[in-house]
Image (cartoon, rainbow, N blue to C red):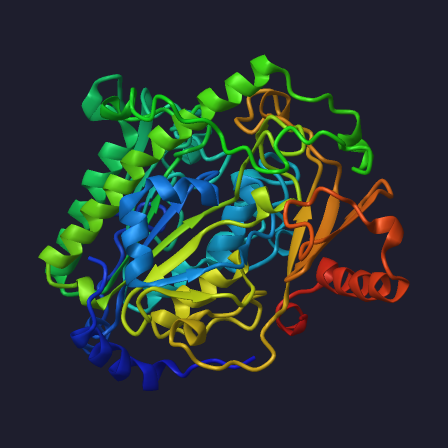
Length: 501
């Protein structure tokens, strides 16, 4: 695996930052993070800042309604083939934090014993996040919004009630922010309740806290990493008061797969689904409008953070990253609202990066995954990623460099979970819970193997919306090749994952 050398990059990154236009607590279980030694502090001042906006269940189609995100695309690089390794919130976020596939984090669902915050912690993952690496490198680190499923400050679970994971200098997190009101925010180990007033709207609260963190961090003359982790536009997709009546005539996109007329070729779990009724279609349209409304506050947050960076004079030395933990389907293949499938609606999500040395208005088509976020943040901070990381740093791609042997496929795994009754991703409400599967996505193919023996294969060159399952007509040689790739992915770890193409 090729990696740029952080020491050689430091000076170059700063020089580029001076000429390019960019985007404009407590941690470690409650212990105050120590300031770096004088020599380390001087070196740390020369490092770039990182702002990471991670949304929840945001699909590609919503970007057209987010003007600040579109401006971010104009300033930076759009990764057009970025895929998540699991289309469920908690497994995806565990992968983002650690750079490891779900089968290596042990977080394969939202709830114990196969996932959730408890499993993430018990498996030692908190010691191997990018936050730990960056904090050791002299960064001030902050997480605001959503951590992962099962971390709920309102629960009476002893120290878990106000627990602050290691690696975070500042912690402003709630576990039950889906409704955007009536939540407890764990503010650096102290619970604070927010009610129903307009000022309590969660994205507004987080936006103000993010601005405050940037201002204070710049004043300390230390680099910082801020992760703004929104609940929006996850259902129920509650918009801010000023957005509640906007986009009144919008309807969900009627793509070729919407309410698919013939699903007789689909796997057994989906094949018996009836076509959506007019009432269901109307409900999907209403939900789509709410999703568009809900992301308006996220877009304003992005604009406000960028303006703060520029006002403090650090916009040119800040990498700004916009991303989603998974996609979302709305009526495709006769499915109601939801995720969890191996189709592009759910696995292919936005990743946009601007910052020092990133070519404005560029598009990167090489295959990337959420396993790559953690090593990328580490390398941007001058930290060498661990050899145990399953992903690869995207820094060479951001710098427009030629990289040998880059992957040409993406791996997706899904554990058909037994959802708890109060799980916000309950498929009985939002549509579609496939049995356990593993899938590989290439530039022109989607191949899926279900644990129950069902198979899917799509020729994406001719069928980009995955309408016709061609597994029965699949060439035997290609079937063998993809089975081999999938088999290698299923059990890989570290360097072995990075070698799979």
